[in-house]
Length: 446
Image (tube, rainbow, N blue to C red; front, side, top):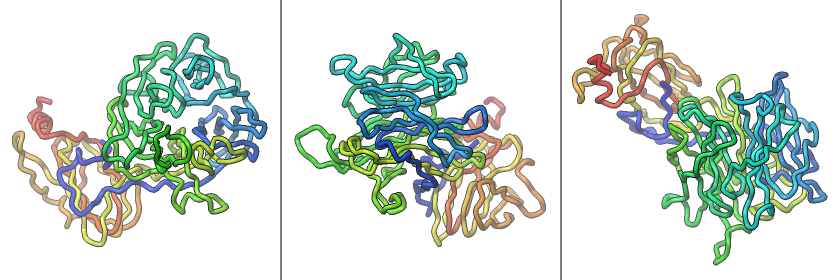
């Protein structure tokens, strides 16, 4: 069990603890000094020699487009490596690692080529064993004629790769296709579009997505702040990344309607103090400490103009603390959050928290499908040694050496009382259950 707080489906109680988006921090930027890096790019992979290689698309001063590479020892600070190949009238939509199929095709590059078909974008597929030497797979097309801004992730629930993409050229909404062999793709199915909770006329530009261990996370890219008029929405405007989540990689839910990644606030200004009007998260990696690293480009000009400027833009590296995508926050007044019933299989509970003061209590649910929930002696808030500080895995300690392992096989409810801080997740060897499933577990009929 890892309970994060995208919504309240895993909770019985939440008082005085509003939901807040995480705060990604830009920890590094990269520019080769020769390329315009203003659109969706920045794909990073660990290599067999322990280093990291980034592929990115850059427009040169002569107007030509190149696929370029940079290398890093720490996955954060990159240095230019080489020109990989020229890209003619095309954009890289995604690069993904595939360790399930042929080693000589370990990496896939999804390319959008313009002008190959009348009023269509051709989705071509290139493969490589090492990210440097690429060959085209003839006769393979992965898209519906749509532009780039594409997410690709391995879907462990479906045992296939999922491609999140638009349905067609110029249509700003998101759906998905699935493939196991990169030769055959399922039919396109829609999964997300702008809705009534978005700002007026906002458009969904695309959604890169990734596996977060027990769910899938997407970053819907919202195009907004353009000048209104009876014309196509292209010139000027900004791109910001929001947050979405899914249990199966197909059915997606939007989170809070505030930007998760934005280049429009003071924290994301570049060295000269300028804003970055468009941000394009493209790839994701978990660091050894469990924090999330997001790689993607950022422009120095608004939409349309940003694709023309020479030498503009950079690749940014954002860092998010472990499970820090979203949190519940308490102020000076004590906040309370309680889980639903948890079928507990033994061991300890771990809380990802930063707070001035917190205690943890355990209750037990007993009875039928509408059970009583009773405090457990020795596991109350008064028995818990109070926590103060910042930890990604605080283990509650109780007076007399009591521990949660002795409660193995029971259905429990965990409660946190918090002042002055944030709670990011609660995890342990258990399973959150709704009431009927919990009653079956107690009766041994699960």
